[in-house]
Image 1 (cartoon, rainbow, N blue to C red):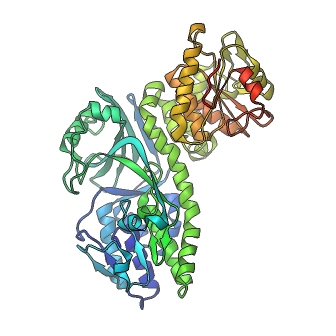
Image 2: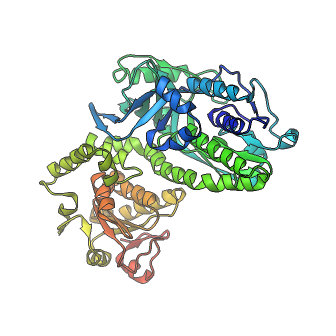
Length: 536
């Protein structure tokens, strides 16, 4: 159910493996219809898809575009980071190739066919594959069993194409009269690039781009936004036009389902899971689902429950890993206007590239890029390496940026306006933590700004976001304290501007990773900030 890449690929794999099986694809749109512009794939993740069937490999070779560098444009500079091999193809071309391949092996393709979303109306079918997208009707009907959950991002995004050809995956950031807007751009053919724009809701409303009725049926595009963005990014795309295809603003929705199957129904692709487009292709994930589901069904031909269980067991770990990586990336895009204002181009680029991975991994891809990041740091810090750079806080000077256990214990006992912040375990609780930080700042305002905000507990993402709130909003140096911090993690936090100091909890018994003290009295005496209580 659903004639997107995932549904078509599954149908092809099953039919070519066993021609005796009757395979029907129902698609509500016409064969020539498609929404969106292009799909992008990482070279490192395509082996499984290519091994199942060569249609994608052939399509990318004959019709796609390939690149190795990511380019980041900011404040008049263009910075590149290599070692990120990717390829892209127009969505329409990919669908045409998959239509042709499915028809070749004997799949029954039925376009312009509205399919009943109630599984009981499809009782004649042994297996129903619900590949009906992020707004899946099947998932909705089976919600009591599948238990779907959705997280809605705060950033706004809209999808265009452009006749301007980017060299490869390119991120363009422009601060206009109403706020900061950013582009994800990449070539998908010899004459068209994808052009996705993101911004925060405040900038979106200030620009008057909230007037289009997004509730109307698919088809019309937001022409006011097209004109606004063509003007804002005119210099970056050499005056080329933006192309529309159902182009309208939305908020990205991350879907998760507790179960992917119910009876003889299996969710596939966006119907089961989504991940922000900044870390990977939903199309790739759907096609990988298709490979796994086809393999499980063929392995357990006479035992459908076992086949569906094997499918979910095979795919869920990798999907959850991608979704886990997507969360820090999506969060970065929810805050990029803040980073645009705070960082110079090289540090901004490193902050972006390190949103989900560390310095050493980036260095393996492009040592020259990391070399420039380190040279920029040393140029601003008397030729010192990050961990060896001194830092003065009031009357106290630290010889380096990594604090020892003894340093942390001493800071906990200091009576100099240091603020200890317990990061929450989830992002939903961050506003409360931000409020406690603001309260602590106000409490010591008569003594001047706090000399340091020390963040512990929570998760790597919530620690970083809370530290950035201290640094970038309140102007307070931040210490991130976490268990088992190695040099790579420490240098990544410092070079990216997420922290001014780092320290490990390995030998500190009074601070736990949950953010709760094992000896609450000592933390209260130290001026700890946590559990709804601010002290300084």
